[in-house]
Length: 284
Length: 288
Image (cartoon, rainbow over all chains, first blue to last red; front, top):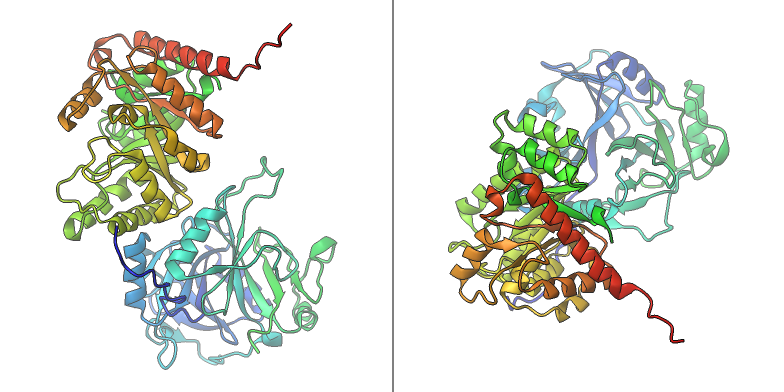
């Protein structure tokens, strides 16, 4: 038995500082691009060599990867964490038991390190986001576009929803707590109009992950693990809903998920993609 | 407690994988513990072995066995992590939710508690995305961990939801370990229980324990410690353990008997155990 003093671990060992980008994979990028534009994102750059586009809205970067995509349904295929030192974050994660990502899966030419997340998804580590952007190397700006299109109603990343199998919450809590320093919010503390599952807060307090086990009585429905949806934060949800409705976005307007001060949920698009709006002042 | 709570282990049976699966199913069992050699040694390759298991209709109790994993450093650690990853992937492919790891017998392994905890945590982390539970067993000849209480201390300290204990009655009996410590353990953290007995009263040296463990185990009800096995099952049942019991019976004689004969002996053992455990739980007859 070691006689080491039990000092607490640093609460943010990787220096996580928010989400750098969220990546979707789809074999029909144009169709999805049109939906993203409705949601306020603008295409700003194209990958130098692959069928990959960069969309932006305010501080949000969203990558649409059609390179070797097999499914038309756009799925969240990766997210990138801003960290203090990407190489350290990668090494640290592998030391703790993360699976290294296959290099061929990377959307980037740059050597952006990453690990396996849930199912087929990846988690990247990015440390160049302040004065130099990773996109400057891999992407060519689209002519005649604004490099930094403003956000509609102050929309910003709020979080990512992950579906998990039954009785798997504790496993995934272990994963996010031990690898990245996420912490669990007390039971009952929810945001938005979908108060379910378990909420984890990033150690930088800038975004959330929501873990959803299959609802009771759902034995007959197909429920796989994966990243199912992004949540966009808005200081004034009704104003954001109104602005997006004007652009043609349809929100579910019945039952418990109808738009409110707390949040709103879009209708499913393209066979199942939804976006959630959540009341949040983080972007202000 | 009934037949569905018990499973055969392929190491008890001779012959090809398909014959083992068939004999197990035909004896009425619904689950089977698989060994990596069943898969990689299959003449049709791994995919054929996986297909045979998946089409057998049997539930996979678990997949074994990761050896000498914890306590290594440098290139030995990196090598074992690679082995562990390959085993985890096979485990997932087979539809097994449990990977069995037995405590290290390696002379290269440290016994430093914190290092062992760290390695078990790492293995548990590797298993999370694959939805696999890691069951850690104290081998009675393990170099630093050879008592189930030591394995439990490590599991407790590692504190990962998918890391639990595997109990093998053989190793408990070989060390004459008492069952009292079980009372301080949580049934939910016991992921697998392996049952067997043996024919000698004592196995004192590590060499004797290894020799007996690998060649001369018998089914519960056939050996000289079977009452202790029943006591173990009763204790586990009383503390709320509702997981699987797997017959891990390494026996050279059984390896040269027809598979249905061995599977029938396993059936008799289930009957013997359930009869004795159930009898205890019947309400006491009311006095007239």
